Length: 303
Image (cartoon, rainbow, N blue to C red; front, side, top):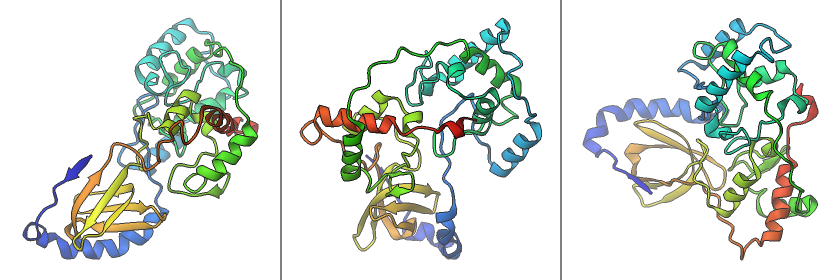
């Protein structure tokens, strides 16, 4: 747990009035701000101007419906090198999934080349996969990686275990107060409507059991302590030198000036409780995981 030392009153006085005026305007609009997520696909990190990035993408992205480098051995070799250095951290060295999904067997997945290119270029909102800035990642870079992935056969399928219908009941009873699926549920945790396409089963298992050390930015657990002794716990959404914004455990967006806090405690985890075998036995866990793996991108979204 990280404890942050806060500046004293005298040190902060020159900034307080300006910051309080700023907070009157900034806090009400925070609910409309989409919090960006980190994680790199093809070494693509959004730069300081998100709008500028979108403009550059629109200007440079030519409409190509078929991978022009498919089957090109030099391109495949280059694409493999780029994948291992830039993508394997999320998708695994064999592309069979780690934090991100298994992306082997793309040629048989139903996605068109144009759609796959667009996913890489524009990213996937609500996931660690951010847009690929054209200033850092060329169209050719993307086509090379896709040409390489096209050569990978799908991982051997394992027999599905678990009852998805019972898993949905378990989800509704234990998870839906914090997680949303298809417009129903809470918003304290990430939306899981497509989690089966974005997370491998082992990663989901570790999340439920509480053994995962991967925390998606925007969902870190934090507790703030006010000068009158109140302790408010929630997930951190934004922070700068003078203020912090969190969503508390009642899903209320709260903004605090650090001058009015005595302590900020951040945890290297989420607020999601770990479910032990006593709370959720292995059979029930199998059912829950089976349900989560059914929450996938639709065929219409693949095109």
